Length: 116
Length: 113
Image (cartoon, rainbow over all chains, first blue to last red):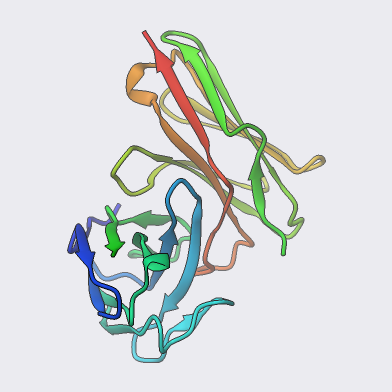
C-alpha cells in the first residue's frame, strides 16, 4: 500500500484565519480524496481532488470554503478558509488507484484541527 | 441518501474471545466493501475488503462475510487481543474505480484482559 503523510499533524487556529493541509504520497496515485471526521463521528467526504482539473465537491461543501489543489499525482492540499469553531475536526486524505486500478483506499494519519 | 450503518456503537469482549462486528447497507448497487480499523489519534487502517461476487473472505485472524440477500456485512476477529481495541468502520462503494467511499457510523471495540 502507499505511504501517505499529512502536514501539519495538528494545529490550533483562531477564528477567521485559514489553514492549508498538505497530503503527500510516496507513489503516483490516480485518485485522491479529502474527508472530514468530526469528534466521535464517522468520515464524510469533502471532495475528490482531480489532477489537472478542479476538485469535485460533495453536497454541503464548496470551493470557496475548502479550496483544493492537486498539482501532480503524488500531492494535494486542502485549505480550510475563514475558520469557525464548527470546523474543528480531523481532516483526512485518502488515495486510491495506486499503480493498477483499484477501489481500495488508504488513508493518511489525519490533521487534527481545533478552532478557537 | 443511502448509507452504510453499523448495528452496535460499542462492543466489549474478553481477550481471547471471538468478536463479530456487524454492518447493514442499503445501496443494492454497492459491490465493493471495506473494513477499516481506526485507533485513537490515527487515520483509518485498511483491514480487509470483499467484492459482491464473494460471500466470504479470510485474512489473518479476520473474516468478512457478505450476505447480499439481507444487505449485511460482518467482520469476525478471532482470538481478540487488547491491540484490537479500536473503532471499526465498514465502507462501501458501487465499484467504479475511483468512486469515493460511504462510511458507516463505526463500532468501538473494547478488549479487556
